[in-house]
Structure formats: structure tokens, C-alpha cells
Image (cartoon, rainbow, N blue to C red; front, side, top):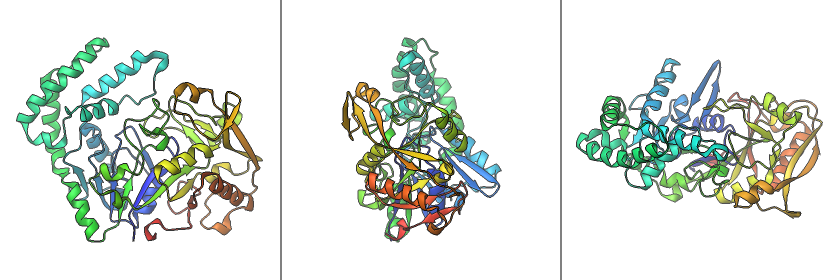
Length: 429
């Protein structure tokens, strides 16, 4: 039996939350391994809708949740999220949630710097959520981060805050923003320490013991490959590595532990924020996809940009992400359309290509090359078996498989957890 790693293959918002929730019924432990509270998963369970940003989705299934060292944790946001889902009936305790002792923390100063930088960029803004994720990762790499384990050592916090504020206040002053005092941050950290420290654990050890005992581990990625800091549409990306290879580094397990890599892809394409989007639709069809798909960011509430499925980008995500199979979501949003297009290539300066360039100026110049297929009558909404799908919908799925060079192993046909068609159980791979 295999572990499973779930990653997005577009620009996030592919419906990973539902898929992870569905797979969690087969798992023992669910692990978040990167990102912060700038990403969100929406889970619909009966008449309850859970919106999660930091908490692993498996908690909804009553499974052990782990926040790995690759996640930057805003302790205040975490506690608010715990309080919110607890009010909805979920049980989140130190027995059900474990947070890596070496996880870096997001402090109020990080959010302030994030927002000040974005404002200073003007027309060249990246489109960050302003929640401090980037500055927190910078501190980690620069070896000045406050980590969860530091909350247990006030003497360590004392000198670390001196070093951190020397850097951040200099930047904030240069940007014309308000600065922070050591007393402010010390009061913040000592105030939240009693509530978050009980969740601290050496999760690398816990995960290794679980692996040796034969437990099934589900690694849950945030954002998506095209937002990866190395492989995405840089600089319009997130601040972490979103590919499956980071599941090991971000949780403290070996690379061989990531198991079957399941890539999540929406049956069309969406993006929140700035950056290139070759297959984006600026017409009535783009608005139709957005309205039908209820395309608003889980965390930000911002309307998502919508376009046709981009097979070139998903194929790239399959290759660099090590994807073994795809879970295709929101197929039902395309029900009843007379024609459906797929981006099968690009035109760059008059030359046709299937390569997405790395340089931002070239990315902005590419134009999509579309292949158009006949749509289908009838509905895929709520389908739970391959036989329930219209023939033309099956042709669409098969064409996607050919273009992205990966099999579709799961289909999601509504937000409901049971409206899922499974062709291959990744845990049995």
C-alpha cells in the first residue's frame, strides 16, 4: 500500500480540499507540507461548509493532522481557525493536531512588510495576499526566523527579536510604514504561546514511526505547480516549492515516502491575482465559467480569472511535479456548452510552440492556440460512475489525458464528497 501526495497542477483553487477530504477516509494521517494561510480549501460535508487555510483537511474526517516544518504558521490565524471549526463541531486537540517544532512563525511584522512592499510596487504588484508568507520564508532562509520551539525559551526570543527587528524595521522605515517594538512582538508571542505550544511535536519522528507501522500517510499540498517559486510563472508565484518533491523536505520524511502523486486539475482554468494566463477568457464565456463555477478565492474572496483548459501548462506540471495520475474536478461546470476549447499550444512572436517560457516578458507575449471540441447534452453533475457520463464528456476527458500525458484516475462531478468517480485508488498503487 502506498502513501499519496496531492498537489495542484494549475494556479491553485482546483478543488484539492474535496479530493483530500475524500482520500482522507482511506488515510491514517494527513500532512500539510508547505505554504501558509494564503491558501484555502473548501470542504462541503452535508449541510456544513468548512473553510480551512492552515489545518490539514483530514481533521474533518477525524484523522490525525500534521502541520510540517515546510509550512509558515501564523499562530494567531491558526488559533482563530481552530476556534471557528471547533464551533462547527470538529475536534481539534493536541491529540488530533501536531505541529512541527521547527515550523517558522509568521509575526505581525511580516504582514506589515508584505503589504508595504506590494503598495510600493504600484502597477508592478505581484498580487500577494498581504499575509506575510513571503517575508516569513525570507527570514527562514536568512536564519533569523522565530520558530515554534522558540516560544518555549523566552531567553531565545529575546535576542532573536533584536536581530529580526533590526532587519524589518529598517525596511519598513524605508517604505514609509510604521515600525514595531520588541515589547509589542514579545507580548504577542508570550500571549499566544500557552495555546499553541501544546500542539508542538517532533513530527518527523512521528511520521517515521507511522510509516514503519504501515500507516497510510496523505501529504496535502497548497497552491499549485504553476505557483511554485522555481517552476511557476515567476515572479507571480508563491514563496514555497509546491511540487511533490517538497513533501519530504517539508515534513521530515524521505523522498521515497511521498508515494503516488495525484495532481488535481480543474476541467477549465482559473487564476487569482496577477500574472500571465494564456488561455484566459475576457468575454461572456469567461464570465459564464466564473458564475457557474462560483469562482471566488477561498481565502481572499477575490473573483478568479477564468479560461479554457491549458494542456501545455498541465503537461509541464505533470512532468516537473512527478504526477502519476490526475483528479479532474468541476467537469459539471461545462455541462450544456455547445463548444469547449482546449489550449494545445502557443504562438510566440509568430512561431508556434508547446514550451512555456520562463522570462516574464516572453510569458506576456504568448498567445494561445486552441483546439475546439463539441460539447455535450445532458449532465455530468452528480455522476458517480463512468457509465453515467455523456459520451462527449468522456471524449473530452480522454483528449485531456492524451495532451497532458497522464491518466485521469479520479473525476469530481460536484462539491459533494460522494459525487466522485474513481478509476484507480492511489492508495492501492
